[in-house]
Image (cartoon, rainbow, N blue to C red; front, side, top):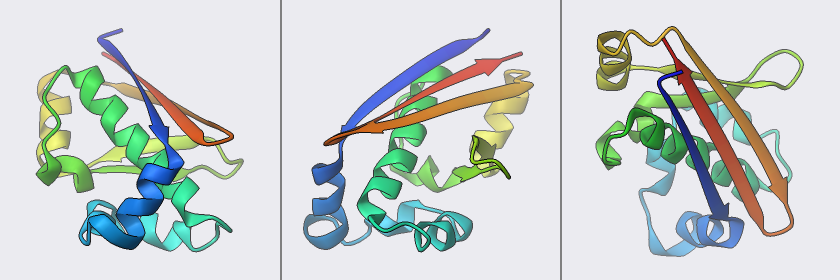
Length: 122
């Protein structure tokens, strides 16, 4: 194992970013993430989960979160609902440089919060 990262996020904080204070919030997500979000009754929960994954992965990599790389981390769901992460651009290059072979992610939601944990392995 190279790293582990966890992020806990208040769903209402994300809801406020979507609908008021941060106009560019949805620009932080890939087109497939945006498409998948439309299947969710409460899109704020979906985006909170995905944003928590992105922040948890920065902690795994032990690097400072940089907004320009958030869209390079994509979290989708497999056939049976298990989430998985795909990296693009600079994040993919960094993973290759670190010889990362596997990224595991777990997402959970309870009440007003979501939590995401990521583990990277070489």
